[in-house]
Length: 221
Image (cartoon, rainbow, N blue to C red; front, side, top):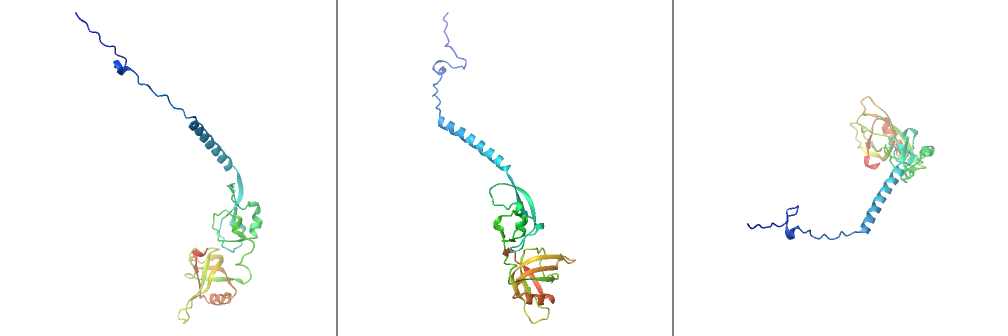
């Protein structure tokens, strides 16, 4: 009886030429890219370390807690000490607060602002020669709600009912120096404004007769 021999089968089930492994090209090594990757990793680690160390450098600065209008003098109640990261910004140190109290705001400073040297000036044009402080006792409807120290307002003459006069602006851009306690309804109260001495007598005269109102100028801060 004739017997036929079967070709040998490898473990993968392939026989003959198919069982031969295809040649694999040698992997190309790129030492330059590998070195660059190492440098990037080391650089990132170094930058992170520097940021962590830098964040630990704290300085004592001054933060404004109340609105201070341009030309107003700084007050102790409006300043507080805070610790901030030393980022190179020219913050005013808390140790200089006495000098700050002898200076004036160069611009309107809002609550929460960290004070810098550029925000203060030694003399205020608002409180110098040619200016006068005028107190106004305003009724509901003669002042806006939420008026604060440092706001800018128009001082307006509002003639009494039946008068032949017309309303007119007496002071175009007056600084609100202080706002006192409001009335029971919260709509009126005592307001002190700084105006030119040329118009202060007129403002006083109309204020005494209750013919003065103020209009806030939010865009003039």
